[in-house]
Length: 159
Picture 1 (cartoon, rainbow, N blue to C red):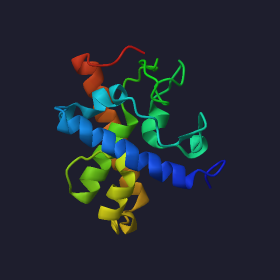
Picture 2 (cartoon, rainbow, N blue to C red):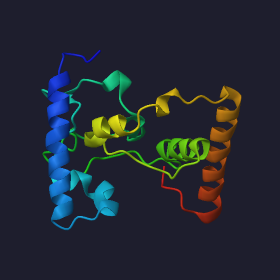
Picture 3 (cartoon, rainbow, N blue to C red):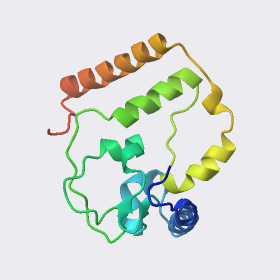
Picture 4 (cartoon, rainbow, N blue to C red):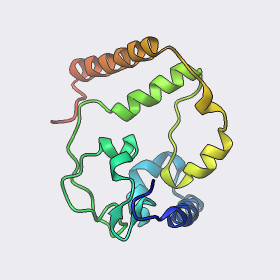
């Protein structure tokens, strides 16, 4: 259930944000640069309704992973860089690798405003099932490999 309603507002924001993202790409922003420039597009998170995250308790892993210690200016599109606690390993990246490995597909990421279109194009994927023990074992293996890589190559973010 969406706290305070807002289902139509979320959909409308997704459509509007998608148009802004596509316009950015048409104006020279490369799709590969989109993640690092997402905030510079000045778009508001579609889950932010009247300044409050309506999905806070059920927010996506991408949001949970970014432990923001500063203002909400980044979420509402008013600009500024968020102050984010650095983490040595990205759980979101590990989950993406797990999904890729389980499905035998390329690693993919879905930009939040495109979630409805992605879900429409990927009907049935949520019906796939794997043994829990195997999924946990693979996930832990991916986490351990990332942690080892971080230690060996000194590519860890400062914590």
